[in-house]
Length: 421
Image (cartoon, rainbow, N blue to C red; front, side, top):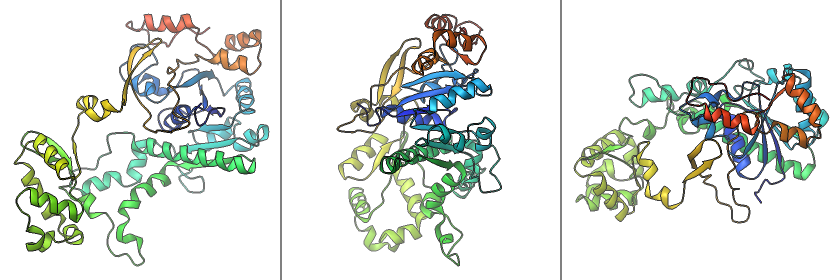
């Protein structure tokens, strides 16, 4: 039994931020029903794939969920969603709150059918500010939270984004913690509540926690920025045959490193190396000299030496070498998974370990509408009613035969994700 066994999640999220949140909830044992539009989550179509609608980004953020496809713009579709919420513990969405209101799915309308529900939204901007109605994506939020600007301070010629959906996943984790906190509070009070997690404010706090610096004070003590993180030489060190990532940080680290490299007296004879504060004040010099020294040995030689003297070091992986990392192999991080339609795929384990309520065994990532009939049947709808809803396009479902048909025809040009029944 997972830690969240018995918890029911109505998941209206798409793309990455919300699905990343709900995958963790599913990993912890919650019953997550992913409510998709008739055309499905956009991320289904990103990247190389074996069958339509089952791209790698989708596979890596939607395991252990069930998929039901509903046209929420139709009044009957909206009513189905309200009925789903009657017995749910959490509703989570990641569109703008105004759009939820236009759909007739505001907090007040959901709480009217279930006052105990946790109504959680993760979206671009707090609703009390002038950006409230603006759309937001990861790139925009990275820019607003100073990340591209910080690249230029660190020596980059042009501003750039972090090459991963950093804001989506950080805000997703923040949303996860907020949902769990709200569930704990409900356990004490019996009351549900509205939870709002804006991307811009969340990422501004995340980045400025490091870089507000002297701007923390009134009047300011400097122009902001964490000097060590912005040093142009804070980067993987080039070695005689590649790169490694090393951090000689504490006085103890430096004494052991200098002793092992034949300069044991440097901290006593050169005031720039004397202590932590002195090294921070002369960071570019210290990092620059270290960069030159690292060129004199191979990556393997440095890794062996640093581990021997207990100074932090790590290989700099690429997207293929990380798959062979001996630590990740030993902890069984990458796991082969036989998907019913996608065949053998590589999955990544949830890294969290719990002694009494371990992460549940993963279930296959669903096709669009794969569980529509199953979910509607659980809600008490008759087969005739379900068939009528399908025929009129209020819901969409894929039969096992149509799922297999989608796979069989995947090598063709038809990208329609299966047959609607």
